[in-house]
Image (cartoon, rainbow, N blue to C red):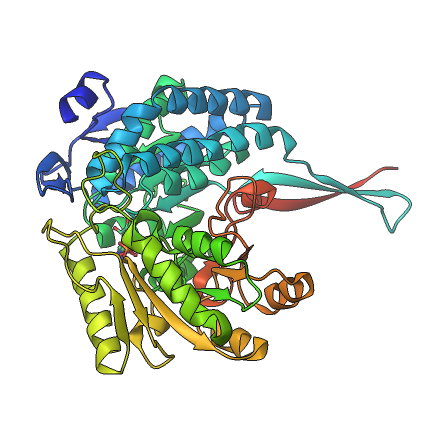
Length: 495
Ligand code: ADP
């Protein structure tokens, strides 16, 4: 696969600064591994503050002309980029499976989904409307102009190597911003391939930059106050940080952004409840919970983290769900029929193991799985655990692995209380055939995204984002563009 990718020109192994592919200035590299086999796929540069400062300067220079293009011109560039992403869907899908491990079918799905953000942004670029405000004074005119925020620093995780980037870069570019992307060091190759395609689409040098390596050095540079001063004191700085990743790093970035009052968007951890009521359709609930829990082997921030089941349907659901989980084939993502790839690394497996041990020591019962898979590496058996309660790590924190904890409840009020008993508030799922209940419960849930009788809820046309400590801001949809815009108010005298 790697050699095929090499031939297609999409296996890029350098950073991108001002339209040029570059190594780390000190030539240091880091290895990228295939999590299914442990094989090294490539070496990429281990960059730091210096390279990041140059990338910010390039983005700053490019901002001047990119932001001056008409919306229609930016739209055409984005549309071209989208067309190229789709034309290379196979190669990009293979690259995602290779460095991230998810089954090829899911990886191809990610390419369509990820490219969708570029397509949507190309369309929406033309609809960044301002406002005319009825004037309170006869001789004044008031209007609002939407202006691009400036240079954007985009920091992304490894679980969606393409989509996490496109959902930030698409709207940023549509609004006239330029970007410095820092993909996860675990999965940088998809980001670099996407950046290569942005160049092929004709997007000017410096509009899209990619650096990777020492995360905290790069982060510090993105947050820095001023990176270059001349005698005219030119303020070159990132004006916006957009981040997807852990809550701990998100908080650090938010605190760091305060130094220069940068705009911040954060997509942080979730602790998604999946509530199954007695009156749910069993098949729909099983299928929905399966999709919500086991996508990407449980490694998404909207993955069901707690399956909260009403007592009347609990046994039936537990049996049917366990049967469905047992049918999930585990293996290398390139193998036909595989539904569960490896976990991203050894630390991820150890986290799953420690959460499970904690639950078992507090009285939970393993219905299915519960150990490493015989395939070795970081493969883990799809697992169902019953009798989980609110004291256990499994229900308090994100397990980020293929473990479905079942919790039991009696009343609707109890279900809502359990569901909201967390600092997170990203996605929630409700399964019921009672229409009044579906309204009542979904409104009472303190979550940014609610799926009703539906387990797969992400789409580029709807706002994605959390409440409480799951984050700030929204990605996708018309709302996603607001994150990269300033509403600038102008008043003029008309007489
Ligand atoms: P995950 O557990 O999903 O890897 P992280 O928050 O650790 O979550 O990583 C998400 C992204 O944040 C990655 O690109 C990672 O390299 C980056 N990152 C980690 N620490 C920092 C930091 N101190 N400053 C900036 N970025 C960071």
